[in-house]
View 1 (cartoon, rainbow, N blue to C red):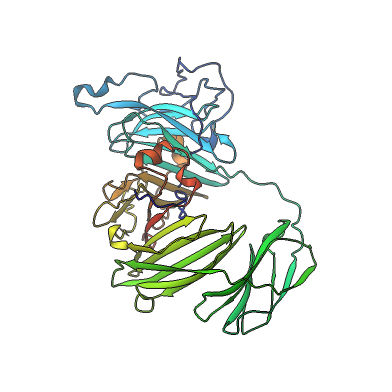
View 2: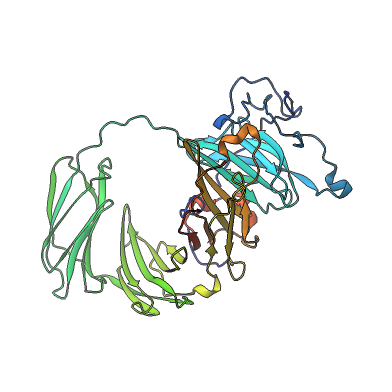
Length: 488
């Protein structure tokens, strides 16, 4: 892990992505009610989220779970690897919705190294369940997000560690009152350097640019009209997009349905240069980008050099405004594709002060090449990918989705970067059959996303969700590979 400054991930590029809580109302047994004595405090009458197990629970009470043959009831002894069986250790699984806190009634399963169900449980009122994860096994969480079924499987779990899973339930939102009418902001920019090739204004929602000198520019706040104010940044740029002069108007109040007119006559010229360089780009790369950003309140302004490797030099000098209280970011990225799959590399460093020159070698991280999903077993699709060597990052996600009846299932596997280049969807019991792809399901492209954070020490911290959880910030390095085509 590198020690440069940074900040998001899993869930998306978008992207998985500590703030967490605790989980538990566990059930077991085959076609019968079973109780976990050390947590049972009463008999519940609720039902498990997502239609799984029809389990009632009340702060850790009894759950009804129809477990398949061979599934070990939670709390039963497993022999700790006697007779050649892999050892199993209890792990605390903690599920939390960042907007709603700990989540009760969430289905949790553990699987052995072959993907067969080992134990099954439902989270308690504290969002916690304690289950055994066999050696080489995994833990899986299933839930509903609005009308979409979601499944997250965590692999390569260190022995005895806690596993924290952040989910987004995304309950249906009741209709909101109609958003305020947009405000139009019309500005007359004067005093810009005569060398300016374009002038513009950028806000939290929109921007407008005009070629020429001393022209008026106009934007609205449509799309964020509910905000009482927005930050407006005016700039004069040269032909390459570098800043020549600027003016910042913070917290400009809205005027719903009306227009705000003013002249921008005080132009600042406090500027600084940043040099960006990206090496290790494959000869077949389709795109290279050098980007420097300044972030003021709700507004982000960029200076970018983007194009093919032959059009973008190995190093670029970009000019940004020097604004007190702003945040800055340097971003270097490249992408390649062959018509059926593609890979990309992105490095970003962010700080509360202007950042110095940034040089990166993409070859230090590698390029991920995913394959189309293998759906020979429709209930357990296989995602595969290749990379020259395990990338020096903190964790990876493998993403697939499929149609299941009238709904969609979104599957994410979280893996150690050294994990072998394939993941198979673990088996699901009949009580959770709604999450299975099933015969005739359409399995979409495989996407593999590997990320590194300055604030995370490695994969164990990703699973343990040491605050700040990576999902709360943005990764410093992102490697992405995706197969473009759907499986036949």
